[in-house]
Image 1 (cartoon, one colour):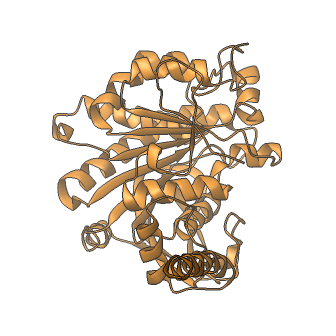
Image 2 (image 1 turned 30 degrees about the vertical axis):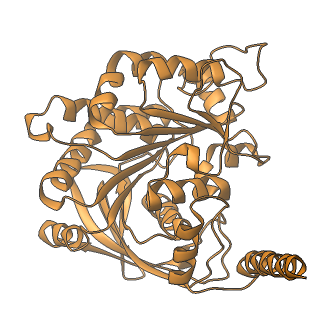
Length: 378
């Protein structure tokens, strides 16, 4: 009788647990409760869907020339100003907006320019939070990069201070070469921002998320910081490269030691069938890091031999996450930050400092020696 009652109780507890999971996915729950539950579960399952109206202010730094006001908001052009401007962006997203769905212009409610001292105070007032810096890839306009930053802030759904560094890209599909030449000009402004954050803001955690050509931009900034005496104590907690457009040979020659010295952990998300990166290899001879150098008949995961190479270059510092599971069109393959599983993985990394082994990833077991090569399951 006692055993029967115990079995009934265990069954009831299990049913309540399952019902709780289902309820969490289909009914809105308060943001604080959702955060507590996801922390309690410690990465055993993916985060609950926490539905709430998103209304936040994110900061921006841009080195573009200011354009004419649009509906009372500051605007910026695809032309280099030679000096940075600072400001705040008010973002509002309704709770029914699905994760991963691009934001439209209505989500950006206000864009206002502010003087540098006010911007610095904005950062310092939130120094107790993690600081997430978003850096866009090639050809994006100011509004485009801002919308992506706002989307990342909303989809991550964590209590962090988010800033977008908007370098002067050409806003043209045909402007890749121009953007490539612009990066060295804009690098000094990112360097100064990172030095200021490190020396005068000192946030709880510094996370840099860069996409495509923006990853090369980060590498150039780290190269300068590594040689700067004022940045000797700089440490970036996490650097995330999404579909990095960084040449393999240049990475080995110019950026490897800088990343090793200034970054605690580098995470690269890449798909072997990223057609944008493959096209870049064809048109511009850019052999991007993370893509397979050659196919190995010993494995179905094309990137594994590439990772084993980079693991030797940055031992204990790098995770390579294979996102080839995605069945999206060729543009979405490159815009990995639109993929909900990628954002969920970033959530665990930034919110709770979970290592890859504790996140919702599959570890590749195809070699005798354990490696930090991971796969996001479909």
